[in-house]
Length: 258
Image (cartoon, rainbow, N blue to C red; front, side):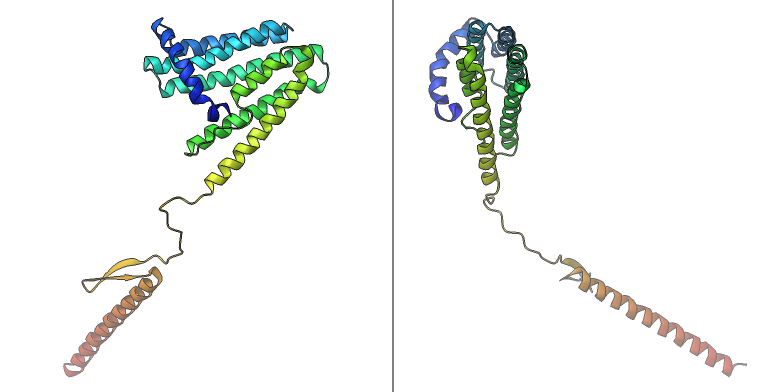
C-alpha cells in the first residue's frame, strides 16, 4: 500500500536529505549495512524487555531503509548489486527483529504463543517471494495491506506497551496473510491474460518438403512415407524384372549354343 500510493510523495521529501548525506560521503551501502546493525540492536532490546529503547532503534532502522535509495540516486550509484544487497538485508533484518520478539515471548508468555512471530515471519517471506517471482516473470506484484513499511509501523505501535505486543502480532499475521492471498490472486489473473500478438495454437499436421523428379512438393510425413515406399517397391520390381530378363536371355543363348 505504501509503495503504491505514497512512494512518490516520500521520495520527493527524502530526495534533498539523500543529496545532503551524499555530500558528507555517506553511501547507500553504508546505510544498508548500518541498518542491519540497528535491527540487531532492536532485536536485543525487544528480547530483554526494553521496549522504549527498542522503539527508538526500530525508528532508526526504518530511517536507514528509507534513505539508502535516495542516497544511491543522488550519487548515481543505483545498481542491480545495490538493490540485491538491500533486499537481502531487509529479509535478514525482518528475521532478526521477529526473532527478538520470540525471545521476549519465551520469557514473558510461556507456551505456544512463541510461535506467533514465526508465523508472521513465514507469511512475510511468502509476500516477498511472490513479488520477486512475479517480477522475474515480468509481472508487477506490488501493493497490499501489509508491506514492509506497514509492518514496521504496526510493530512500533506494539512496542509502545507490553500489553499491545501480542494483539498487534495477531493483527500483523492476519493482514500479512491477506496481503499474500491478494498478491496471489492478482498475479494469477495477470498471468492468465493472453499475450498480445500471439495466435492460438492449432493442431496442424507437419508437412515435409520432398524433392521428387527435380521438383519440390509438400506432403505430410505419412503420405511422403507411403509414396517413398511405393517408389522403392516399384524400383525393386524393375530391378527384379531386369535381372529375370537377363537370366532368360542367358538360358536361351545356352540352348542355341550347346
